Amino acid sequence: MKISATCIRCLLDRQEERIRQMEDEDVKSAYLKEVAGIIASSGEDATAPYLVYGINRVYRRYFGSLPDYEKEKKEFNALMLGLESELETDIRMGTDREEVLRYALNYARTANYIDYGATNHVEKETLLGLLREAKGEALDAAVLKSLRNELETAGKLAYLADNCGEIVADKLLIKILKEQYPQLEITVIVRGMPVLNDAVPGDAEDVGLTDMVKVIGNGNGVAGTQWNLLSEEAEHALSGADVILSKGQGNFETIHGCGLNIYYLFLCKCEWFTKRFGMERLKGVFVNERDIAG
Image (tube, rainbow, N blue to C red):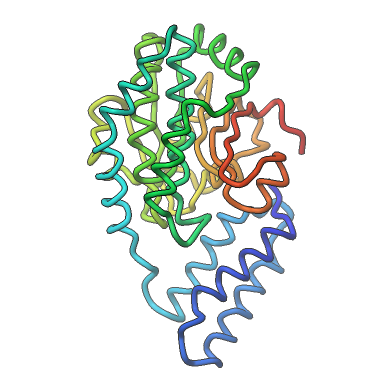
């Protein structure tokens, strides 16, 4: 997905906010000039997550290590694990297979709120409120029908995960998928290196996801699925998948337009996405790649 003017403004604003409390104005000015230079010199196909990946290297040179999100990752994994049994009970209250899958998709989509890349503060009460409303949220019936039809005959599913905490809801969705489509060979792809509160293989192990399904890292620390930086294993899993289920804005930004059969599932959390999909903030998207123009 090509970077928009809105995303460029946001990138600069977030970097200024990141260093606002630092005292040396000359250093701050030099840093922001380099950030602006990275954006200005980027190619037409540059995405926001990939640009941030380059900006982070500059940040380390000026200011040392990046902020550590281990505390937040463990906190939200623990919170969601505490809710796991209750959420699964709610999911299984569906009256038929389709409704059970819809509930599982809705919970997995709602948990995408836990994203420190799109917002500086993730509020527990907001998350809990969203989860309470998740089952009743709209999920495009035509897209769901298409997904169910394709899963009936699919052999391989690649699942692009996003954030910690969220991966507990992903685990529940994957459990339902394995029950309803036992022929599916499912591979979950997480980040290969720590970035923000995104999940890496160790986080997937912490919540028990690795006990259920194959989990691999993607080989890099971009907060998305940057094709030219993917490990051979991750690229093979995506290229060989009959269906891809992609979570989160960052994955959408980096993989949209690649020509694969991708179903996107995420909440709109920033201005560009709300405009692009005609959604209010924190409302959910469920759409197939072939139905998206541009």
